[in-house]
Image 1 (cartoon, rainbow, N blue to C red):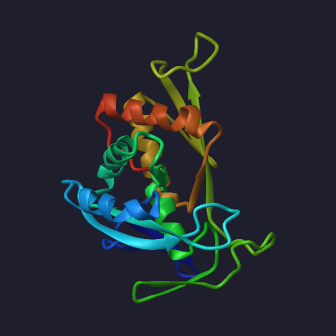
Image 2 (cartoon, rainbow, N blue to C red; image 1 turned 120 degrees about the horizontal axis):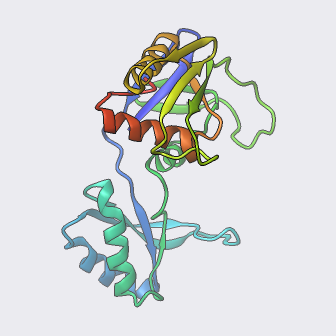
Length: 223
């Protein structure tokens, strides 16, 4: 897991190679031991533990569940499908299957975006209440990326030509290849903490990724 910790000296890259994502299975308590034995022999399983968790908001007390540790993050969905089918898609209730890797890490370590944290020797310590409605935001350095795309259909498409780009006060033009390289160079030089776009998830970022792949341009757009 790669995280970025920001302080007054700037951004710092932190790698945690020891994080193991898990998911949970709830079934009738009398069946958990048998399910555990059958689950432990599956190829994609590293370990199975019996733990107690509150599985619903209305629960006052924790209930016994199985915590399944896959060998690899990519094994989670396949294992979940096997266990769900073994319970007839009714008897086994699965939890934390669809969480993103980053979200899992944050939940397990009590982290939240923009929260004040203390990090020392691999341990995270929250310095703020994560339910607080108002808290000071760090003075992050931002940059706005805007694209000019030839869109004869009226709505820009992935196959349309890239005509120009602008990052803050820097205009980038030329061939599509030179524009892509220019975007990457400007982002590296400005080194923003946050790169902002208008419609980035829907078009800008997928469009740039496709153009870069087609033209063989190595773009990082980040640290």
